[in-house]
Image (tube, rainbow, N blue to C red; front, side, top):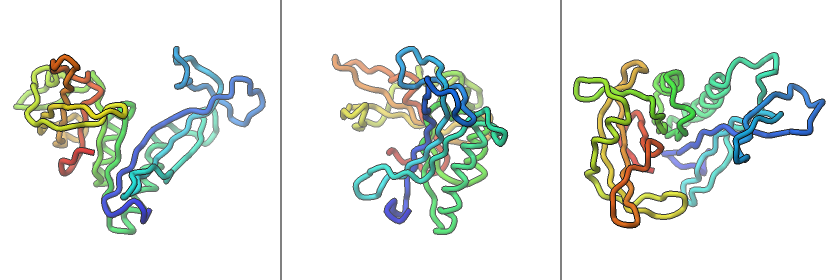
Length: 215
């Protein structure tokens, strides 16, 4: 944990281990094969992983890893495993009197995850789904309507798939249904090759609790 610095950043993600030929593995379940083109279902296990980024080199270090299966007698839910992972990191942060930033893909865009982060009083970034609604300017809006209405006020450079891109960013203060908490909604507008502005779909919309910081 010390190599992660005083403002640690954690990446939260689920993966899978497939065992298509397995027959006698303990608690062998069925998972979606994330590496296949058609996202087919195969025999295997879920993996919940959290890595921390080192302060100097920004290299990932595993701080939590758990293989689990829905066929296990002890299994409760995927959310419960995620909560265990987050709690284990928060316990370490509390002992050091630190606050971390947890970065999550859109698979974690659900109110239970939001509420858990609120309870833990940690910073977080969550990539939003297109069906998410937010409260802004005294009205509830589909997130896509907010996205399509913005042009981007701040010009910055952002890494997309290993390549630096010129982008425009808008930041709005919004509420979500989870505990009616206020969040910073960050919209990133990417410049196309022809110089035309285009939204990087909803996949680049992020929300987080606490101070604004672009990673």
